[in-house]
Image (cartoon, rainbow, N blue to C red; front, side, top):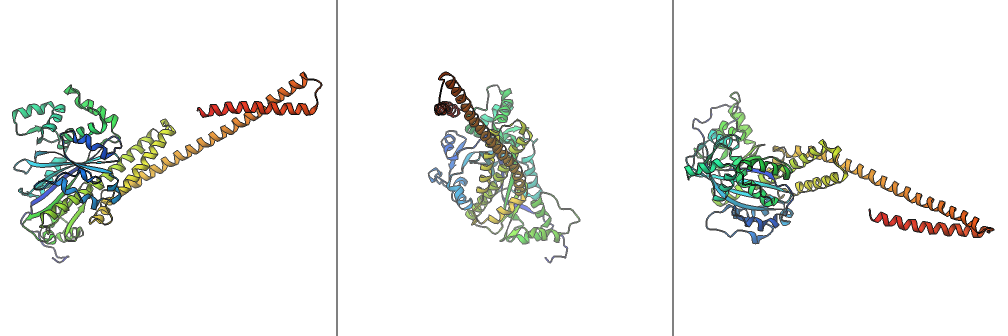
Length: 493
């Protein structure tokens, strides 16, 4: 279609036939961790099905028959992350017990695979992976599906493993009653995010913090958990991000440009999650959407979601690899954003209470922020990664670059304050030491003068050389004793 000539979109509605939907949430673990040392602890709980550490190939799961996504991560991480970050074992991946959910527009339970990544800085990334191969969704149904997942107050229907169900029963006793009525599902008037938090995040935090976050009194469980989390977590909050990967549509298209020409408004709605205004012409939408195409596929990063459309990839293995690489890039960006949010939160808390903080706290905070900045820069995609350009664009699209600039200004203020306080403290300490030494010397002279006067009076008549010798000896003896006492006391401080 030539630009400048307006024509109506295809009358047929666009139907999505083959897509993957991934919801990713990052959360704080409360402290810095050594991911590799946590592997034995996680292998003890039945929630964890498999562990993958790229730094230690012996932890790779055995390759099963058929498709297993955790194994598919092996190798892709090494080619996507920066080499040094992987070599030092800065993170591990875990496959957790799956679950099944009922979502609007779906005819049956959707199988959800769950993955967890743990980073050394003390941040976890939880991913819920839904694969729709036999479902047909319209664009609006897909948008509604995403909204239901993210809305705080909604009715969630889930089917959980026994381990996750026991955690859920501990916080929502009505869930056990619901399960007794219908063995196939649990229906709660809670959002999916809250249910997943209690079923997956809480068990992980128990391993990390070494605490039992549940109590026998069911009525007190959520209040007790809230108090424990407030005391242990450095930065509260639960940030969600969705990734949509589309491979097949109806009508079927072999090129994405043809899809855009026939369905510009629906494609725009997929990208922006909103209907374009009526006054915007189709050719203007086509021009905008075509700017998102690279090498025959679309990789469009937005602040709250990412859209990937690849209609040319017919190979199952390569398409799975593309989806995993996409997820890895998004995870890197979301964890980087979480790091900056954590550092900004700690710095803003310091600014609000800086009058109550001593120099030791400020120095420790500065050291942690500096380490966090170092981790922020080390966590990146390899310059040779096929998605390196998308990674750079994602830094701006998710507002990470702007957050980093804001955090840097606050950190500079903290650094200057610590340095100035430290310099003043050193200067004060040195001045006090000089005054103490001068006081000792002058005091010794006074004591020696008193001793000389006493000797002159007691041994009269006395000659001048004897008086000088007596004064010098008295001064040296007194000074030696006083300096020995001073050095002893100084070492004990």
